[in-house]
Image (cartoon, rainbow, N blue to C red; front, side, top):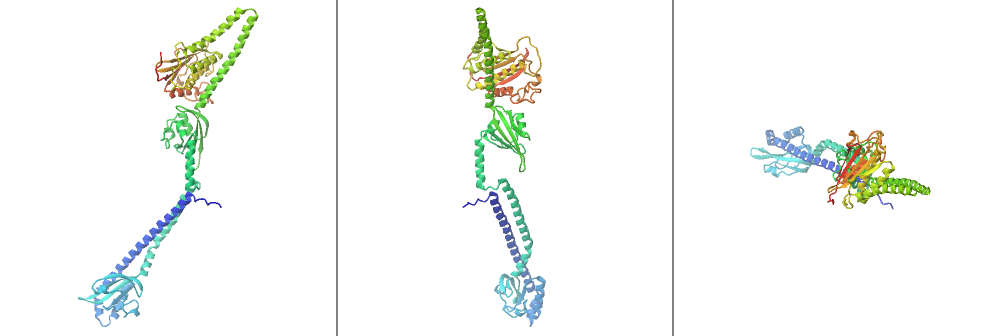
Length: 546
């Protein structure tokens, strides 16, 4: 047996609102009816009292009562007054309650039905009583002749007449109540139809379950997720998005251009067209951005997904370095094979002394650079990086020089300064310098009498780590000093910052990001001796032995 599905939230609200509107309208109608009926009853009582007192105070009535046939005079008079005043009946009687007048002439001479004691005592009173004409609101008052009561006057209006008057008065309020009921029902239907559309016909339990799943999914997704409304305000952001963009708990409801994000990333979030796998930099991370505009409802919005590309980019840089090392080793192995053949050939020709001299010279040249790097840089990661870069630069025909004042002892660098960041900073600066002097820059020509050279300084002082890379290339143009650290800037394309392909223009941006992450500074300019010079200063936060 299929269990019936609970009514949707919209259906429940619709039923509740219809009942509420009906109760309010019916309650107002009943209140109006009761108020009008009470007002009509009071008005009828006042009208009957005024009529009865006017007749009782008339001198002609007392004079007619003293006559031999009071009915002959009083009956026409009472009927005329009844028609003029609109009351239902006027009965004039003697103190013994015998009628002299009545709307129905056959009732004349009969005993009056009702109470007369208060009137006989000299007072005027009103009551609701059922007489010969049915229930009525009546007033009884005495007729005085001098100081004695010679008769009684009763005037009244039947309840049926009062009800008919109330019904006539309620016609307009009833129509208004009906219109209000119809209009309220129609408005409730429209509102709940829209609510049903937005809630997809789900009931309260289903909406609660969807909300729980929604919250759990947002917390479970490691990637960043943002939802922007039509005004480019953050409508939703998960914990991953806050972490990747460095947002606080008050990010929801803020405009995107107020978040302090880098201009290219802000432009990507504000774009109306979709963005697919765009790489952008924040203050500390590299993120891959995908945006998808959505439409529906009253406003357009955008769904943004963010993936952390920082670790992958670092691994890619390390992979490039390893690939370069492998290529350099392959080239060196090839070169070593050629030299070995030369040595063997010299021995076969009987020139052993020349063979020994040739082999020794090559070994001394290679060992001299290795000894210099190992002696100056005790930090193993940096030493390995410098030796690898020296091999690469030599393979590309560039002289690699480590300055004599370079000095970094093993263990002086604190654990808070990641070796990966040092590889990112120094490796990218050396690669850029080699590209500049090896002819892979903007394509401009310059001449050098000497061999192209890259000079590296790595020195740890008491307070900071100094890394400086200088090349003999064309230097840095003055108008590029401000934008060269932006993502996408490169001299390998016709225009800096425009048209850079994937992986291009990230080197200096990654350098600045790593430096900032460790609280340091980076600066680049054209050196006085020519060529570009980049200087990085990283605070150590520990005392370094001199």
